[in-house]
Length: 497
Image (cartoon, rainbow, N blue to C red; front, side, top):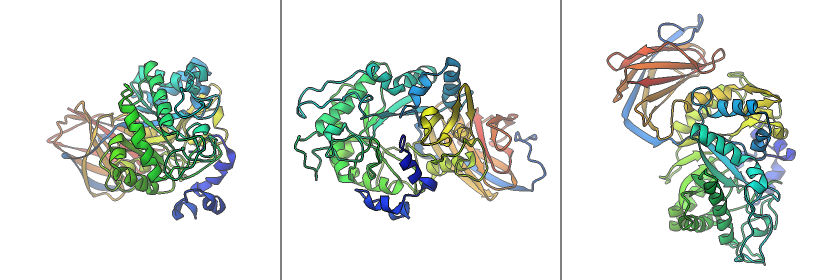
């Protein structure tokens, strides 16, 4: 969303927009946006105990999970690239290691349109003229993103995709990379320089080719980011119909490019706008064929329902509490930055919106996050010190145990008010059950596991005293086991045969 401009950080205080700015948006924002025991659990003290029965049903299947991730765009990766090796490895491990950190599996790149960072800084004489592209090495390894991508791909097998926030300015109606503007050539535009749609598609494909040549093929590439707002940073205004028009061109260009990268869209600002963009693409045959993945962000509107009429994968690819306050490491302090809140956000996204992936904004705060604030990352880098947050361990409780290719399976809970349960079957045969206890009392839960070859369960507890702490294994007997859930906790159960 916003990266380098303080005026827009101030605009998103408590996730609300100033009325005057909302009214000025080229595509108006929605009104809502403008206005320890033998059970293998940790000790829970003397709090009251409730009982519950949780049934896991492997025969009931939902969406496939691609993974969990972050971005290190807008200079974050470049800052890390210049830090001592010990700091680099600490950050990479905390974010992507499946044994020592969160076990994230996805990185989202920013395709910059800013001069100095874009692969095409100068306009050709006309849209059909041969462009002069810069190499990734000439733009500081894509602001460090190529370096970062190589590390996590080689060490942890993570995948990388990329979104542009804007086309280069000379391809747009406002002749600028910032303050909105629309790609010349889509319906409703008039540009003396001509139709730049194909040139923009070629530009995005060239970026994908550069990454493939560097040994890090992109899974997806997207042409836009939050195109209903026009901040003073890389941005564009594109309506749902205009976006659908361009997606058909991008998809066809990728198909004949020789790279494995596929087209995704639309990094919409929230779930209500996502429905509008998805509908426009779904009803346009060429755009629908071209678009392999739909992406949206989590700001302002709850991700509490599937996208209507959309049958392809859906990812949430950016969300954070914009906060200029100090780094908040808390698990459950009542703030929107707390790990507990983010555990609820992930749970709701996976179970209610049927998301295939869930991403946070920044992985690591660095010195370049002085505007968005140090509280918008999962970890904080201050000199040679790297600090973790409850948010990091909330992501870890899902990502470490729900691996790419997992299928969400059925759950049912009786008794035990306040339990939020999700379950996933991994391709290696293991099963992950993640339980958030939002109650202020502990629960003793009996788990019935159906359709899963289960012999042993290892719980991992996160609460105010534990950060993904492994507990004593539990033996499964006749397809069932019993465990204690501490109050205000997130417990991941790793079930294996």
